Amino acid sequence: MLFVLGLKNFAVNKLANQSSTLNYSSFLWTADKAVDGNITGERPEVSKTCSATNHLLDNHTWEVDIGFLIVVKTIIVHERSDKQDQLSGFKVFIGNTTKSWTMNQHLVKVQQTNASHTFRVNGSLARFVSVIRQNSNILTICEVIVDGECQKGTFGDVCNETCGNCLNGSLSCNSITGQCIDGCERGWSGITCKEGCKIGAYGYGCNETCGLCFSGNNSCSAIDGQCKLGCEAGWKGRTCKLDSTTFNKPFSMCCSGNNGSTIEENDRSVVKVDDGTEHVNRNAIEEHTVTIVMKLVACVLVATVTVQRLMDTATLVAKLGGGEQRANKCKAMPTRSMYG
Image 1 (cartoon, helix red, strand yellow):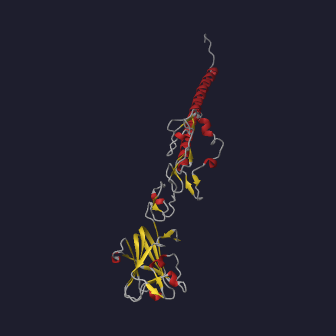
Image 2 (cartoon, helix red, strand yellow):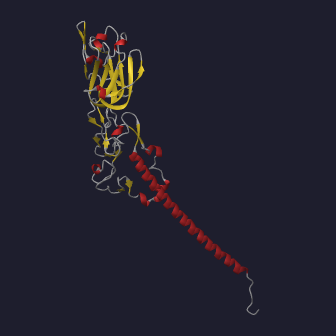
């Protein structure tokens, strides 16, 4: 199997036929030799790796049947390096039918090297590729490469497998391997995201661990981690990961760290998967956001209580200060005799 820039050559070893077959020196230049994966177009191997039509005829056709529709990206036609006149003036057509190649899409060549011709295709769906040479005495082809990919949502050697539960849908599934490029949806894991979460795991790619659910973590939802039967004693929240005494200690929650750990140690917002790439851990982000909000609420509560106490203290000081001034004023007043 040949790969070019992440694409796959769908033509190799597929069913090929031609309008006629050259029989030269008791050797048949059959159509299948143009899709055998060997691009050699030089002697002495040329007769073993190239196809050719009968030179006694005028119009020549060669065709390969992929067997199913693919998204065609590039077609490369290799010719004999010593007999380039045996392919000159040829045309390439792609389409969904083999009955009339004139109804198919005619491709325009974009690049030519010494012994190869490249045609770019902007993602057209096709099953058949035809090479046509008219008003000539022979058609010789050493290899036809049809690079493409499966239609969106499918993958595999014959594009018959369906993409798994990929994040962002099947558009992010590799058309060759089926790997979900952006990771898995909630409740699914594996390279192709077709494996459900194991008991005790949940979330995107099953990267999160269930909390302290009542009756064990087997009652934890594989989608969002919610404990279906509630929490064990001393724990609360949807995922049963919050200490139920936390809200009774707002000051310690506001001023303390993350149980003695640094933010970096508890930051699970980015995780590595099997291929070494890093992906966003949305479960960790959601839980981290909830924690931050709780801390902010606790801090606001602490600040409110503190401000209220300061205001009460200020009021008391003001009252005491006013009473002392009145007492001093009374002491300063002259004493009068009741008799004048």
